[in-house]
Length: 413
Ligand SMILES: C[S@@+](CC[C@H](N)C(=O)[O-])C[C@H]1O[C@@H](n2cnc3c(N)ncnc32)[C@H](O)[C@@H]1O
Image (cartoon, rainbow, N blue to C red; front, side):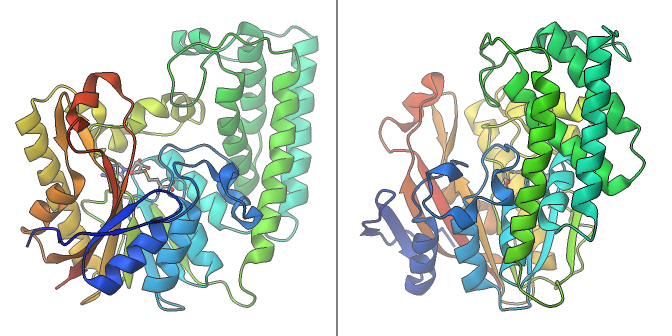
């Protein structure tokens, strides 16, 4: 069955939203999409309660927490279990816990899994003090090494030399070797994530998603000072998040490195709803994007290298027809795995945008509907919001029909 095409235009704050399919379900999707800003610009929201753990670490194409929260609230019964198989930085899982739902997440990016686990886990007794004390020691050691003009603790790669000013690189190296020496696993993981959150601020790159250089003057000692400040910020954010969790026993949560096309760590027919935003075909390259962090944190990215869906590094080389077929094939494998873990009649909501290969548009709503024909999932409703497309070489793909961001609901038959 094709993705429902009955069109109803609704006027919403964030731009017109067009809906189709089941009236009630599409209204729910439209309401979830209707938030003040998107793509991780959480600072643009006027609700400070959204800032806590979400704002701690950059992650490409984060779901808007308000969208995640509204979908969880409407689609997962209290105490029920929601799965985000492409959990990234854990937005859906954080919101699920805040709403008293059981959170399950998978991702092939080991950095995402560490970040999401840290974000959904409130601080235990004494954690804040232990994390801050260790950060103070790590910073002091880095400052001592800087003043003593100590060399690097290991051979630094050419990529790192190109990415950071020399004095910053030495401070980062000292911070890392200090973190390595920490024995408490909770503290160590937290400090590695703080280090990971610093890289763009002290690198020669303009932003996390840009390859352009941004020559900056970074004072000696700034990197280790920032490291300590960011640790204080993490502890404060986690404290704030902990305060907001429902009182009483915290429901179980499960986050694992797993392939969304296999979901081997998720039991069959155990999920009340899947709420997720998969990669957009041919748009991002999570492996390249996180290369520096994966390298510095010593994380094994081989599974991500092999299994990353929609990765630009593969799609950019394909002809449009081949790209379309490849994307449908990848969606089929994901939807089949999703169908296995969902309970009967349970919903799957995907947030996914159109993308392009050369001048050819890959319309996410149509391609998901075509993929669903080969699975036990049936398209039920959709809501679509227009999204500007700035990428010069592929802009032609959207010259006739604009690029859309879709919330698509499918249901297990
Ligand atoms: C759009 S991002 C999800 C962002 C997330 N919703 C958030 O708010 O942070 C897509 C994620 O899919 C992950 N991914 C790509 N291929 C995967 C696969 N085969 N299995 C599991 N995760 C995968 C990427 O590592 C990335 O974290």
